[in-house]
Length: 512
Image (cartoon, rainbow, N blue to C red; front, side, top):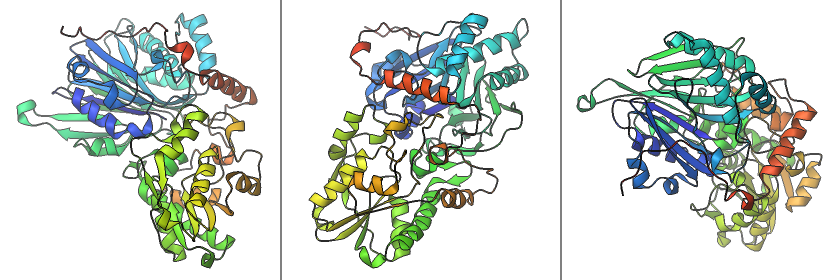
């Protein structure tokens, strides 16, 4: 999971991209990067950290131009601590291409070998994004050799890319001197949307075009959402702001990631025609029925959400079972999302830094805690213990998502089975581990039904972490072993990567 944005305008875009990345910060807190283009020259700044810490005034001044893109990173391939693997990535031929990517390539290892042995391209990092940009660059070179670059040639290259890469990918690429290219995998696993804004006459008039991972980035920067990029579709926006589009995949089908609606996306976003907020309300309603079937509502005194993503589900659940909804935890907004923190120790330590219980809401009560999902179980265990320490008589736990039993290979950090509390454990064993008096999970089929009802055009969902069904059809036991080995190595710690030499695109020299 990452957040990406791209803009073509007639006015400087550095501040606009910065603002959009702030709105997408929930999608990645490990690193951030922006590249802009003035004429045919590209300027880049990227580093580890949050957006507000990565970009200072001097960095923004060194990012001129009316075309650009940016990314906030949450690593699912490669090393979380290596600045070389922060995006955007750059290759100087053909044309000069800079690229940001949200997703995960499942055949990155095979492609890396193929790029070296056949395409004669060297990959310098463990990032699948570097693999992706080199595949795109190679296909662009083949498509555009000895002829002027046109949208049709760009789309020809994207068609070839679709045939070579597997997995999930939402991509925005800047082609120096030509414009922006965006495309989405044939299943539409990772989100991508575009919108427009009318520029004032003082800035030359015309339309400004923005692409982003979520509608909140468009709306929060004054753009009107046009539509989602379709699965397998490619958009090419030329420097005049004209949008060219073409379907570039064979037999595309829409299977958006269910975890976007459960946890990843902001509730005020709309993804593939589905309001994330309404999806979470629907999940709360069907979860309420599971609670009623499991235990008498009279045993529950109060319903308390685990901030933030579970609030809509908890509110709807409380209304359905006729019990009061209360805020029992205060969240420290200056601590990041624990789910996407690299390293188990960092997650465990941050739970109590992030949440503090309001004792009056717990003392002497039977409380039903509602969370969006239970992944590793360590956070849930800490929270149940906090509720008991605050004086709760009984602590029940309900998850708005089904048990997370299987690794995810499409861009969510659930890579190893051993890390998942629900893998090869019964519900009773999970309840004992987290220390709750009762544990209620969402039903997989009910989840798909109530979210899918919000957009009948959706064929199905990518829900492999819940149902074990990998829709790309190319996942084997060997793939799991390779991915688990890679990510285990990448997570060891950052001590060995601190002094590595960084290869990157140089920005314009800063004034002394």
